[in-house]
Length: 179
Image 1 (cartoon, rainbow, N blue to C red):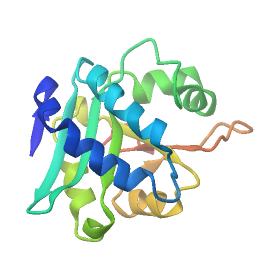
Image 2: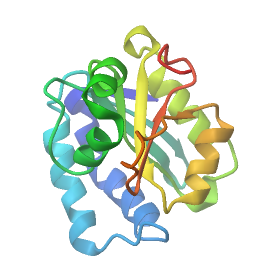
Image 3: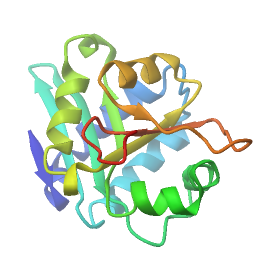
Image 4: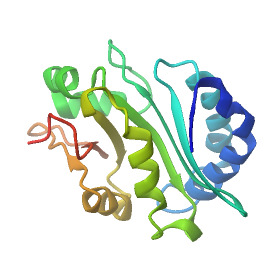
């Protein structure tokens, strides 16, 4: 199911629970403070242009979710954005990412992995991406996650020579900027 804007805040507690379950485990190992910070970010993120959430539910609760919004100019300066900007350079950031749908979070609980939940969430949340342009970033330490994105047809954008950081940037399977 997909939700646009503030309506997702009705599920904030369930999303926080799923976030904590997924991101407190390796390779993320997020602490309680970082997990609490997600709840605050969600309150702010719902006001971003193009914000949407896709989520999968079962009788157990939220099995997984994804959040996304449209990347605005100027390119953000917080979180992992400086690493992305350093790796891609200003021209590729402008051409590939600005105005595209940015997948901010993708969280699938361990019991729901390998069932197609992640694929379904990505497909649903990117279905109406502007001009089929969607992107995401992840940690290079998350080898299983990187392998999953490759398997799902996402394309890793190579870093400019000498600029590789611990962040990997991926373009969606339908992004026109893919090589």
